Length: 96
Image 1 (cartoon, rainbow, N blue to C red):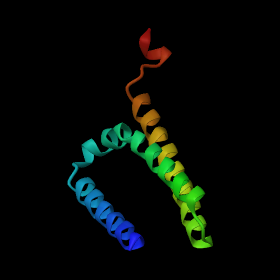
Image 2 (tube, rainbow, N blue to C red; image 1 turned 90 degrees about the horizontal axis):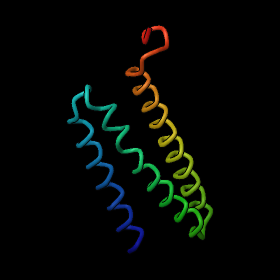
Image 3 (cartoon, helix red, strand yellow; image 1 turned 135 degrees about the vertical axis):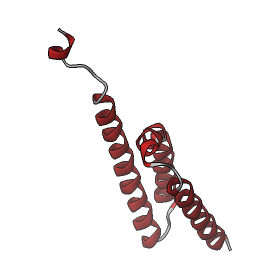
Image 4 (cartoon, rainbow, N blue to C red; image 1 turned 90 degrees about the vertical axis):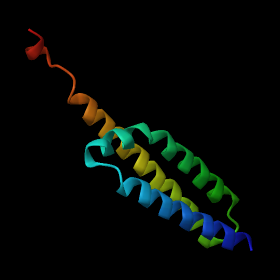
């Protein structure tokens, strides 16, 4: 029964996330993604908990994939944030 509840929560979270992001205008997507990088850290912590608590090979593989994908998502979010902020910085040539 616990696995069915977890699957239901996962599906509901995926659907909700898709609907929320789909309705965000493209001009706001990058700031929204930059502002929500902390969520990716929470995902990584949850995936680590799943990985360390796994008792089967399937659970370990899914936990590892969760950590890997969550960390990649967080790193990508920070890279995009840095790139976006670089657009607003003035260079030394422009300051003179």
